[in-house]
Image (cartoon, rainbow, N blue to C red):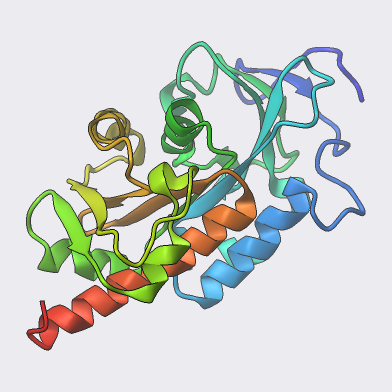
Length: 254
């Protein structure tokens, strides 16, 4: 890999590697291959339509740069058409959260050769890595999640005695919940810009240390896990539980 530092011609950020070496691999489980595949699946579920939503995977096993790598989908693109060469690669950890406003001064291990921006969700993904030691974080604009935030007007979505709760892990990364446990997902208010959610998201994750996800009212949900498989499974189970909760409310069963 080329480790000679270069400067992004369109910004002042430092790019360690401008080649495709970090994102082109024959391994179907490589993060740069997984992200486009998963985004396509999420698109067909209605989770990431209209360029919304995204996913980030933290690779803890590639330490040649002296730390973990975080693979992130680009922002504002057709999520079902993402290619491996569109993926951003950032070093982890970082001294400060990677905000869009600091992109011109931050270090990227790899940026696409085409003019793309990293996901607007990046600082929110980072919260899951920092506070839960997660290795994957998913953000969806699921209609079931949005409806749950409208029918539960308070700060929490609560539901119990449904089998799919067993698919959720305490804190998103610990032991699985049981049928007898009550699922509590905190709800935060939306903001005009995605990165402005970070402070509230971080505060809420600290206030609810056992929460496996955070709902954003009229917006969607952030879900994380110790692996991409776990994050995906929990996102699916949560979506089922949001849908069931909405239907149960509408049928006066809650």
